[in-house]
Image (cartoon, rainbow, N blue to C red):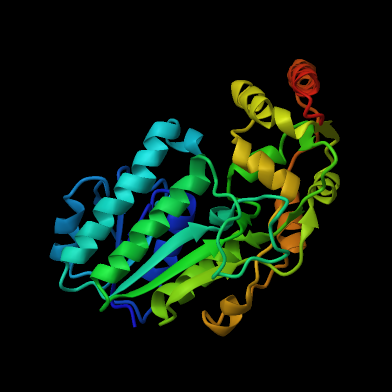
Length: 349
């Protein structure tokens, strides 16, 4: 049972919610929240320590507070939230390395919970219908959050070999969504027009933000170990999701995915990587047997229900006409160039 818990990333939405939940748990004696900036909201029952996990001083924080359980919530999915791709990678990769080094030196840490992502599986046309935790990516993500998550999990496996006395649980979440959380996927479905890969209608799984916090709390205070997939029941396709939020779909060639991501980022509408566009083409499915049998958790929200709860907060598609025109014109022009290049190279579309 967790007694003294350290939670990283408490100034971010999910990290703050988890710290608050643990702070109210009578079975947890002490909760220490760590981040580089103070939380935007009060965290009752949580001792906030201003510290950067990329700095070796995190070791002193763990030592001075007698932490026995570490919950690593500071693996960041969206680069714009931290100032770009470079600081994102530094926080995700270097931060994880320093945190694990501190845990390795600690004489009190006995449990480590890592919030990871189903992005480690990638998205390709050769994927299985459902990924189990023992499967790997058919094609590893080439960059961004997916690649960071693979590196983070690699460091966690190395830590497990060096500290076999520590219980380790890695949680691979499907896209977390809901009425309050903001992510790349929520920004995408808030676009006035949804650019979707031409000829595809990918299956997607989601997990409601409330279910995610419930699962993280159980993971922290329980005794489950290993790797666990987490997602709501069922699937929803890209076109079904677009219909739920009342957005028109603009089909674009998959070859123009990188250009499309650049256009939406330049217009400050969304930040989408080529790997995320591959996800919108090929989708991804997770086997969640271990979620129920090992973690002992069953989500209250299905994938569709979670998305519908998010959709309640999506406003009508009536942004400035100029913004819509810029988006459609830029995407259409870029897509046309991609088609011409593909035809010229003999690849087709």
